[in-house]
Image 1 (cartoon, helix red, strand yellow):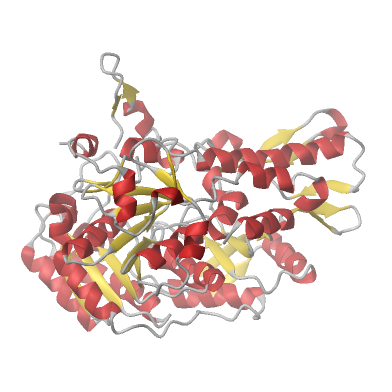
Image 2 (cartoon, rainbow, N blue to C red):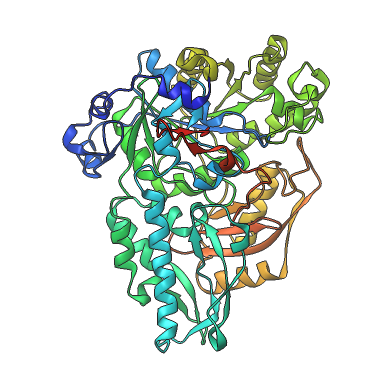
Length: 560
């Protein structure tokens, strides 16, 4: 059965029933039909005296282009914790239309470990992503309208740093020309999930915080070198109005009826890669365990979770789960190449102890990345049907020798929550011990020192080089008072390094920083590694070619 067929075969519970398992009243909900709802922010105030549950972060090794099941592990683990008698919830990012119609496909899990309703969540859901695009582009329109009507702020058109955005992958929009005649200037589009508005939505703690952050957005510079922020263009209030309902967390369910908060969708490689603070804070007041997922490997989403999201939320994780698969470890050990849409070679799917042992070094780095933040690690080995039991057990034993507190094989994709019970027991045991959480760097450090610390500690780099544009950007950010903001690194997810072809645990490489972007409203700086694009392109055979509407039933087909 396909993921879509499995999801349609389930008899879901009404969203009011899901909410009741967490002590959420119907009055706290704004229902969107029977199976999804938004939650009023007033719920957190009502529950403020309740103790917080255990906070479980799920991250991973560097994946193959196919992904290694981090989302399915998060879902399966939350279901397994419920099966063991705990009140559990999972918090996830909303999928992006870019991957849905591009390379990856949907982002709601797979097999028996999915969130429901997968069709709605993968597509328009409750309209949050559209609200982000509308709010972002409203500011773009106001900026150009300001220029047209005489430019009273004396904004330098060549120093405008605010792009436009669109919700699908379109490489033709990476560099554009705006206007005509003497008003022509360079511009660009970024995908919605890379928009600063999406980052703000995920990091804002309430409507007042949201409004303040929107006003702080850096649009560009005046001719005299002064900052021009969104507030000066008179539309920050209208932007907040467009995002008023989008700030409310979305509640849905897993295929086994476990509550799931799916909210905000910043990418893990080019944005901060984590779901919203408001959904996590709310879930932690309602559940014994909250399982949250950070995008891609620990070098990306988890590092940003620790040093951006936790810094801004005041929350800290009790345990980190690092997901690995035999096929990805063998890929990092030279066992073959994985490409979307092409069958995996035997060197990745069959027994290959040599490649497995060599590729295990990648997992060692990711264990070290999490423990370097004072967070204990449980390794989850996501097993596929034909995986060798001996190899699975070998990885578990080696993981514990490498610094993990525990390791377990999980078969949640095939078996749902039942297949993740061993993992859930290990996570509960380790989480009860608590963590000694700490940030990787002090925000007061100079910008270059923060970037170098991330690159050398989390990636294993020998050092960092700064290209001329990055040097100019760092000088500007320092001069304008943004030096003390945390860092968001934009780099490939396919390697610990900046170079996708460098597999395993490379060393001796130098990370080149192409530019530095100031996201003053979101409250961080983005250091962009060479070769990274903030607008993805479509593959030769996009997933959208397989998606259609059945003319007889009116149902969606081909969505995965």
